[in-house]
Amino acid sequence: MKNKLLNPLALLFGIRNYISQVVGILVISIWINFVWITPVFALFLLVYKIASYFTYRYSILDNQLLVKHGIFFKKELHMPYERIQNIHRKQWFFLKPFKLEEVIIDNASHSDSNIDLVAVNENVADLLENKKAIAINSKPENKITKSDVNNNFDAQYKISNHSMNLFALTSFRGLFGLFILFEFYQRYSFAISAKYKDAFFNYLGSKGIIIVILEIFILLIIAFVVSYISIWIQYYRFTLTKKDGYLTFSRGLLKKETLRINIKRIQSINFSQNIIRSLFKLTTVKITIISDRKESTNTKDPIVIPVLNSKNLYTIANQFFDNLPSKDPKILGQRAYSVWLFIRNSLWTLLLPLPLLLNGNNWLTISFFIEIMILFAVIFNGFYRYRHNGVKVIKNDDLVIENCRFFNRHLHFINWHCIQSITLRESIWMQKNNLAHLKISERRGDSSGEIISRYIDADIAKRIYKWYQS
Image (cartoon, rainbow, N blue to C red):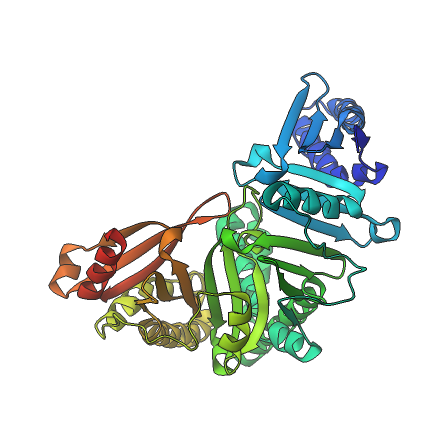
């Protein structure tokens, strides 16, 4: 394939950015009273995007992938196949009838070096995988395609409808959506007219506390229904396979995503449980990978197994990862005094209901009720974080770190070679109680990430610090 154009449907991918840019210039033109600029800018931008499409060419050569683009400044990007790290495939529902997909190639260098082929034939990604295998191993790889019916995998996991329901029903996504709305109101409430805010609070103030709680409960139900549907759409037919040192997972209803990862590029493994899944003994398995894509957490820390029961967690996970123990390791370093410190650090949340009191005495009962709930959550959070906090070295060169955040328990497994640095921090007050923070830095996505275990036994923390130095 030489000097190939992308499919004309590639122009659809630029519509969202095109509309947002036109709307942005429209707002500015209204503000400066030059509205006539908007249609001129819109026409110029449309011509530019069409010209950019016709100047973008890609070539799959014997030893490299070559991309040429640019209107005024011509650019060429050469990516040897042995430098390719990850190939990410995305197929929106409107591309499927045309057997097209978006193929994203990165080499874990920097974001400018990635290649995004937004609308190409389905066989392009398979061809690149084969070229990469030839360059690295001097022999072609067994390609995983739709025609592969032998299921000749080293390991395979497919999510069932029952597991999918458990995964969706135990998600906090809907609750976080409400939290984001609250944060948005706190930051931008100044832009809302006082007339509308007064009318809203007067309406709520005229209701009884039972009615207000009932309305909040109905809002939570709606949020969780939306969350349930969105999770089903995102993780529809989730499949994970292991073959020839690679993990491949695919998912999605409206947009099918397929990502193939070299196991050697995995930096750490994370067993995650929110408080609801902890009650039902369900665990989600995530990994941290190296990538130069500036994308969301779903790509940098992808979920490789959405939900597993604790009884078969390690049995199934060990089929895909070699450095895991056979059962939950006994974590070291917990100190009972840390319960008070975790509670103390969260006491600021008791100030959250105070804005309600500014709207009249009618909110006094509701504010008191909310304060009691927050205080209970703060105390429970202190004990929960104390129980799930610590470190331990296993198998001589693997480190396990357990921590908790927002009622989410995380058990991280990271190899010594994947640790970028370890920081041991002790304040004067922490030294008096023989406590320390231990921070682990790792390569995450296109930057670095941190795993922190707070207020653990200082002797244990120093032992881990010396282990890393040695």
